[in-house]
Image (cartoon, rainbow, N blue to C red):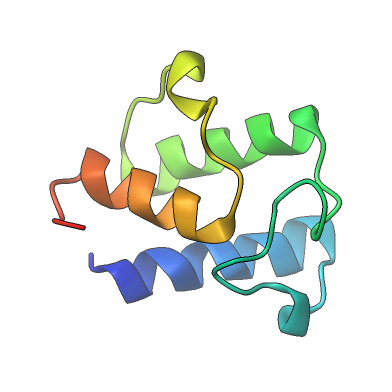
Length: 83
């Protein structure tokens, strides 16, 4: 899996699960301000990432994740893809 595939997985999840229009999902989109996610939505996203990509996520690791790009960078680092 590469960074583009990770981005596409996340974007598709946001579109399907949260009915966020595709044009709003951009790398710099803030998860909470621009995409109207809340903490429960973030936990749903973590559950999807753990299931789809087979990674373990500690809630403490999520404190600095604010944008779609942050999610992609986080997942990439968890599976060993350099930034």
